[in-house]
Length: 412
Ligand code: DI6
Ligand code: FE
Image 1 (spheres, protein in one colour):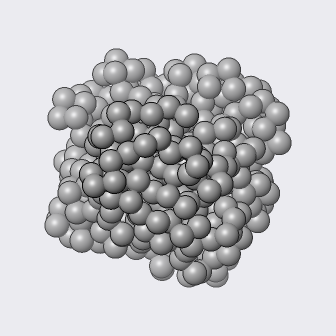
Image 2 (tube, rainbow, N blue to C red):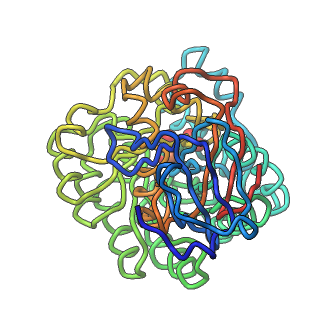
């Protein structure tokens, strides 16, 4: 294994099993009886404990892992965790027989969260988002993507993205921000979706790009969202500002949003329950990541499964995320998503864990620095009280996190 200069090590883990997650999705990339050294926030060496090169015992803090397991810190690559209010009333309506689409068409749904988000102050949004982020973090999450999309006006979209940025100062979590102005049509633009897309492309996007409030742009391409033409306008505007692209597509119907996103070299297409084989092939050709969101599938009682076998056959990387949001996935647990990815989507535990580590990183364009135990990668490390990696997916409700390191520093 590679090594950096031994005297630079700050911390050395010994007596620990490593699930490096750097071997592709069919394996955990296990190193049993391993060791891992940290230097300046990065992984400086890893390998078998018996192969540790000589080091200065006085300079290095040695941590005995006591036979526990270490994985990369988890990555939740798709959330909407900054928002005002909640939608428990809508949950009740759905249980009385209304569908998610009917509620959206009747002015509920996303639009009702928009009203609450516009009303909330930055401080209120921050205070309500923090426990959600905390819940993820306590379960081993060290990187989270957060989308705007409940403002749908310039001021509130910017307010959401600022709050998302402030969260990074509250907890030791890397926050990646995504501008989702094209999430839903605000009431003041009723029947004028094209005009709203003008606002997104000509006013919101330039400001957000200029103030560096987001590095990625997302669109909800759907019957109750935006059509292909509108989606393409947002993509081409994003590209002109040098912003990366993602899409919510094929969640409720097959509009072709994924194939369109592939033409724009998008990082990922997310949801994709209704994705066709051609769509899967387009993703493979563009090296896009498929982000599966079992929480939304579960919470909306969807029955159409994403095309998992086709994704596997075409070699598309699969990520798993919570989609934390008030309407379709009010569930702040990536550990539960690991369980659901296996029970609902029949992923193997190794695939599911890859989905919240190496492929979660890939979905965010971070695959060169996060999501693997690899020399040179950020020392975002989760240490688990388990006897085998599959336990992370198998049991739910007893948080097995033993300790958590963020860029080499113990944070939990
Ligand atoms: N798809 C989703 O699952 C969330 N957004 C989206 O485009 C739902 C957002 C909500 O219902 O508030
Ligand atoms: Fe979403």
